Image (cartoon, one colour):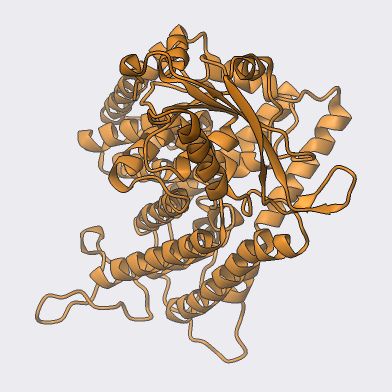
Length: 533
């Protein structure tokens, strides 16, 4: 790394030689921060300005974040804890999950850039970061704050800490590797696949087979288990609710031909989501018409051990997902590849030898900026303005603010105490929470096991607004279950709202109405209304 007489790090020459790790250039960090901030601003502002409602997974986090549980009926708890903290700091809004999602993605990109700086030049790693941002999981897939997007920064931090632990073997680095592995598992259980990939690398790299490294791995494992312990105890007490949920939604395939067809469909969808990335790699790394002088290769490419780490870490999430599906003969969902391409850009750059890194980075900046802008406009306009013109219902054009206003006005018409409990599905409840100033508890589908923060006595003490989405052909919503119907039958007052939601009615004629049936259960003991949160 070149420094001037004042000791300030300067931009490296096109030679691109790797600087000592302790001297990663401040200007490279500035570029990373600038690009990450630009992505957050572009996508968050676009979503916040055009979407009328959060996506359904974001609505789910609004609902779950009411209470800090050690686990929730579908997933581990960490994303909901994060949303809880964000709501305490910034309040609820439709824009909040968009900002949280894009922030999660760019933190993952920045950490993986830092990982790349360990075994390639800072410029190469920056190009890899720009290319990886073009994987659609990391841009148009970032319109909802869910367990897939929340996993990315913890997965990146885990890989960085593990790599540094294997190279420097300092106890605190091993402890950090175990901590981030545990936190990743507290986000989503599929974090087990990159963890298995790291263990596979440890087994394959014989230079790690020393007493000191095994002690380090033991430290990491201990911290991992300590981090997971409260959730494991919750799983035992709850009879492993998330696993029951996973089993209930898994679709088994009757035989090998159907399984292979499902695998082909899954791989095809992953390939589609890599199209912007592939186009970007072609544009950035193509041989230009002029003659660019390639940079020297000294210190700019990973050695054999680093390539083994990179490839093992890169392919393990997707490969192990596929193997699990084949063994269990379970139909694969396209979203299962969400955490499988975090290292894709670094694999490409580690496999590309002689390039002019300065010229390549300039092309990467131009292409990534254009691609992000094009993808952003295409997604937001198609799900909002175009959908409105074609009278197509989407979650993005759902009138969530109108729904919330109706909820509060209806409740105030019959009760002087504040609205504390909404009984509804995740989508309806999450939209009301997102558009409400006061904290609301949602009793999901009327099932207390899904909402342990609402005790059975609380509905009587606090009262409740029961909502049943009856919009015809609204495939994005769940039908009311028996538990919700039972609570609706207890309502003191009932009625129906017609929401201005573009769409077509069941007969196929154009319409602009979403229908929600409501019921008010008046509170019997407002002074005793006590909700956990």
